[in-house]
Image (cartoon, rainbow, N blue to C red; front, side):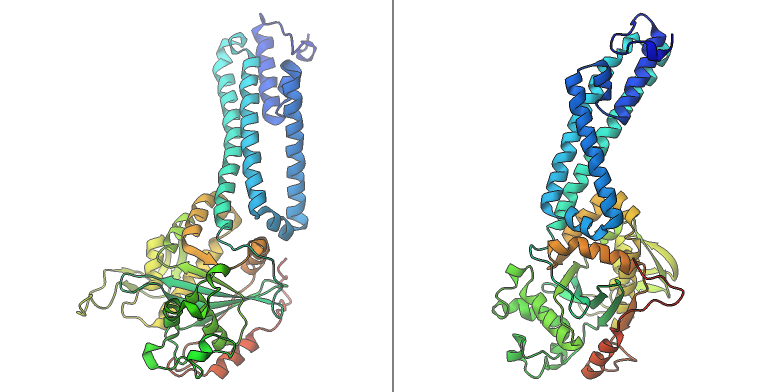
Amino acid sequence: MSFTEQPVRSPDTRNPRVMTRRAWWLLGLNLLIPGSAQVLAGSRRLGRFGLAATLVLWVLVVIVVVLVLAARGLFLTIATTPVVLGLLVAVAVFYAVLWTVLTLDTLRLVRLVRVAPNVRGVVAALGVLSLVIAVGGAGAVAANSVAALGVVNIFRPGASEPPIDGRYNILLLGGDAGEDRLGLRPDSITVASIEAATGKATLFGIPRNMEQVPFSEGSPLWNDFPNGYTCGVECLISYLYTYGEENPDLYPDAEAEGSSPGIEAMRDAVEGVTGLEIPYYVLIDMEGFAQLIDALGGVEIDVPYDVPIGSNTYDDGRPAPAIGVISAGLQRMDGQTALWYARSRYNTTDYERMARQRQVQEAILQQMDPATVLLQFQGIAAASTQVVRTDIPQTMLGYFVDLGAKTKDLPIDKIDFVPPLIEEEADPDFDLIRSTVEAALVPYTPAPTESPAG
């Protein structure tokens, strides 16, 4: 008599061969279609509930796959809202509990003592493995959703906004709160201008020591500096962050809008330099971003020349030796090494430091591929919440993630306002800077052999 003719619900418990085959079937069905084992051999009420829950899960998975393939931006916008992430945590916990109950009940139904002695260990191991897979998977979803909630909370509440002249302009600030400084000071100042239609990005680098920065008449700084920030080396563009923080009355609504007086002062300055309207900023703590690189598993950087590590002088002004060196060539850097590479001032210029910081930024962008982010998500999320501050609305997070995927597939144009383009940071040609910006931001057209990002 074949196995299919044997009653699964009321088997011949005296026959180890029948009970073993029955055990394989029940464990397999529980793993593939949770609830089906109970319908066949246990509590039909529990089984029907498990099957219904499984069917709902399959429908949800199909909906997600369709949205990812057909409307990725919409999916990301929905999936990155706090409400949906909270629901996802609850759903994952529900399925973890349900699958635990169903798997343990299936192991009871198997009647392990009636299975052939030589396979009891294998059957028990398979049952435990199926429990680990089901509960572990649901637990991972719940943990990642909780981590994602932390990332989403970096972004401020607010409505989505359309691009300006077809572009999203974002001020990227690398904050340096080193021990030799009072408070934070932007050590890296970049504007990322991203074409909304294609994701094509252009980066404009501004030296932190730029002087005579102008402001528009609408800026609160116009009243204090109608002729620009012109007081020599005591009025570098990076010092405006401190000036804004020391004069919070200039920007009374900054904190409520997810910013700060110092950031708003920097935004006004960069808008005056470039002639661009910049609705968003991202501030990255240079001290903390080493954690982000470590979470990524390090970054690969092609070092063009040996870079000494250290400062030129001790605190008392005496010359100091280098404490190490990053050798030329392709290097796999951990977070601390990458931080030194980006910040080291030993026998170098600010322009060289700008170039190195740009290398690190691009390396991080290139390594932010979906596989790495998925595998290291919780570490990346934990690091991000500690090092990133922004006023980008939560409702635009999904859209920018989708746009960033397009950006990653296209070459990034980079223009630094340093020699030979801009010869004097003490007396910059702002008309040349603005005309350069305007000329660079033309609509992107793929080359004949290049496919547009999709």
